[in-house]
Figure 1 (cartoon, rainbow, N blue to C red):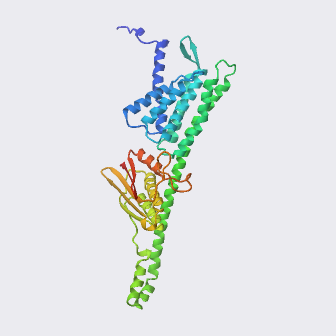
Figure 2 (cartoon, rainbow, N blue to C red; figure 1 turned 90 degrees about the horizontal axis):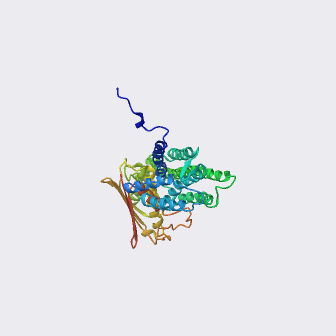
Figure 3 (cartoon, rainbow, N blue to C red; figure 1 turned 90 degrees about the vertical axis):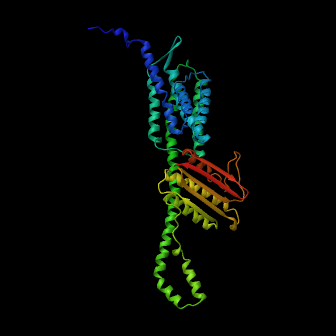
Length: 426
C-alpha cells in the first residue's frame, strides 16, 4: 500500500493557513452590514447597485478607525452615503438615515476593537483576545435584532420621522468623532474611552428599536384612519336601513294620505316620498371592499361641501396592493382634491376619479378644479391649511407608496384644473 504524504496538507500550526481561514471569515462577515441596510431601505434591482453596496459594506466592516486618523471616517461615510443615494429606493431623508444607521454601528465597533484590542508587531497588526468575538458578535446581534424587529415590513415613514432618526444620530457620531480626534492611546486609564465606545454600540441597537416603534406608530395611524372611514361608511348604511324600516312602518299612513289627495298635491307628496334616503340605491363604486369604503366616505365629504364627485372605477376584489396602502393612496389624493376644490365657489367645485386594473397595472387619475396652489422652497406642493405642522398635501406619502411598488406618479396643474396620475404594477 502506498503511504500518504501528510506533508502535502497544511499543518494547523501554519500561520499562513489560519491567516487564509481568517481572510475567508472576514470576507463572509462583510455581508452583515449589507443585510442590515436591506432591512432599512430597498436596494435597487441593479447588479451594479448591489455590487457597489456590497463592496462598500465589506470595506465598512473592516475599515481601520485608529485614534488620530481624521480621514477614514468622513471619507468612508461620504462614499457610503453617495452609494446609497445612487443604489437605493426612497426619499433623500430615508437614504441618509439608512446610511447613518448602517455606518454608525460599524464606526463604533471599529473604533473600539482597532484601538484597544489590536496591537502592532512591526508592520503587522495582531488581534488580541476579544477582537474577533466583539466585532463579529456585535454585528450578529445587530442583524438578528433587525431581522426580528424589521422583518416583513417596509417602512414608508414620513419625512419628519426620518429627520428625527438623523437628528438622534448626530450626537453619537459627534462623540465618535471626538473620541478619534481628541483621544490618545498613551493615557494611563483608557476605560473612559472604552466605555464611550461601548455606549455608542449600545445606542445603535436602541436606534433599530426606534425605527421599529416609529414604523409601528405609522401603521397604527393608518389603521385608525381606515377604521374611521369604515365606521363612517357603516354608519351611513345603518342610517339607510333605519329609513327603510321607518318608511315600511309608515307606508299604510302614506297610502291613506295619498288616497285623500288629488292632482298636483298627490304628485308633490309622492315625489317627496321617492326622494327619501330609503329609496336611494346603495352606492357600490367597485368590487374591492377597501376601495369602495374609501370612495363612499369621500363621496359623503364631497356632498357635505357641495362638490360634484364623479367616479369611474373598476377595481377587482383581489388586488396585490396592501389594503392599508390602497386606503392611503385613494384617501390622500381625494383629500387633496377636496381641500383644493373647497376654496372655489360652490358652482365651480368638481372632482372626477378614474381607477381601474388593466394589463397588469393599477392606474388612477384624479382631476379637480382649484383656485390656486402654493409651493414650498423645494418646489413641492404645500398645504393650504393653517396648521401646516400637522397637515400636508399627502403627496409625499403617495410618492413613497408608489416608489415602493415600483410605480410612477405624475401631476400637472393646468389653468383651472389639477390632474394627478399614478400607476402600480399588480
